[in-house]
Image (cartoon, rainbow, N blue to C red):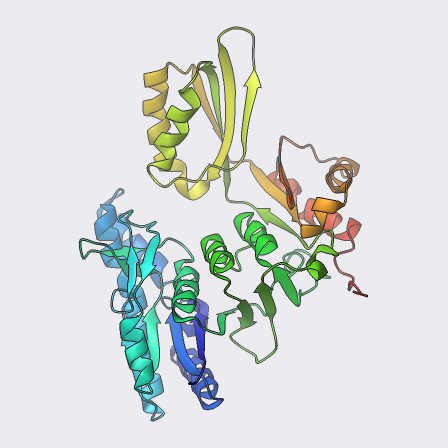
Length: 410
């Protein structure tokens, strides 16, 4: 039986008729090379942003269920047009919504998570010799409602389908030709990586690298799906995101990234008693708000200060929720700041190479950059710094760790 390849095309790849035709030709070439093809497609260009803007013209706080009904239409336009372009070339093809493709989710509207994939319909269409086009970013919950998976959700759709179909590879086509050691728009000598581990890619994605959605990488790691990040505009080999191996660990630092989409939240004089932190963060978690850096400062008396960071996208909802928690718990004051950004280094080799964090801190100090908050894991170090110092920080860190140079593996 022919093997299955899942390909995902982002909004920039299908933004107009000519690009749709180009994608159609690529999919047909893949089929002619002896593969069965499932293509997952995002909404065209800025369609999602335009739909959000229309919703805001009617309501500043539209019901999330209705937002999902609205936003899901963008992908349905893309899959239908792409299927038409493929059919025009004489190839058998069918387009499927997320629901028709078996993408079953929970009911957290606008940020739904995939619970399971039932690929029966997709397999049936493949067995009949068709190319299958599936709408990314969307699924269906147990009540039969359309749900969406959040920004970048088409990546997660593609990986989930690749896992369920036991595909050979999940190809993610985007407007860059792979994963780089830094954003090449900031660092001219940034180097494209041939390979990177799931763990390193997950950290990079969650720390601001917008190549892949973090949830997609997490899913790929859990199910052993190899992801090939490639350019929509060339046939060049991209970056393979795969399981960890010894070769990856010989590279101490794989990349440096930045996240400008950060808001610092400072809760002042929080009652210092058991259960308070749980009350605060469970309230945010219940609404799907991810909290990143967390720092608690000890003070004299029965109070403490609590600092954490969130995405700017979650600012309005966080403020509303924290206002309620503040009154309930008797928190003295809440301060918000968006003047900061996060710069991070990631590398599997950090686990066995002491001094990496110290080197990063030294680079920042040499450039007169103050660190406000530090967060670490086995394979990453993140620092919260002034936004206007980020470009300097990224370039200096990239240079110090010599990320622009090729690493030879014996």
